[in-house]
Image 1: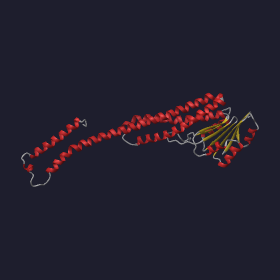
Image 2: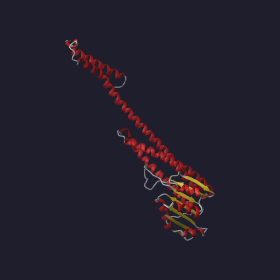
Image 3: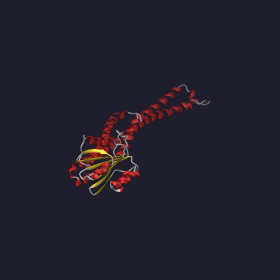
Image 4: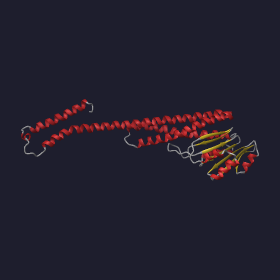
Length: 319
């Protein structure tokens, strides 16, 4: 799909390639070209030929997996972002790539899949419900949306972590541990993505400050927001690691208590079992069996042994 949105003195309208020709002949207009799921060769030829975009930037945009990045060409720039997919509302998230080629009068967005938020902005511009003065305004909108989506997922995780902290000490199953480990893995991935965006947003903010000073404060705010969410992801990962360590320590303590009980029982009954085993043998010559009080003596000895061992364990504070 390729579509064109032209803003000129006559207003905003969307259409086909004829708008591209109209844009080239009107120096007061600006154009938004949106590409999604285009054949790679045709897309490359159009972007590098008709739009005169940098070939390396276009190749980076067409790669299926590429980290967020920012390149400048004078006042123009190339921005590659990884927003969350529309279906991602929790830590089981997925991302997609959006490339933005920005010049004074041209914005080209290249996507790997549908992005409902972008479609909504497109429709709002066409219907006149929203107004922007140029490509940089739309970049500000998209970068804000990206940060807000990551922040929404992280704040949802905060509420879940509060619930887990309340029930973790009373839990005896492995479900919570598995959930925490999955969150830890997802946060590691999110931190890596956010770290890229922190660098990209910082460079973008400095570039906008140099070439579009009217938008400088807006983009500095974007940097602060993405840095805050990156710090939040780091904080939550530390919290999760603490919860995991606490859960493991608690389970280890419970296991030690069980082993203490088993040790006390085993050590107490082993010598008693030995005595019972000896006097349970059917040897003909066992003088103790003929003693008048042999049974009571044996019971007393066994009781003394058991009592002595229990006293010893008590002194060792195992009981």
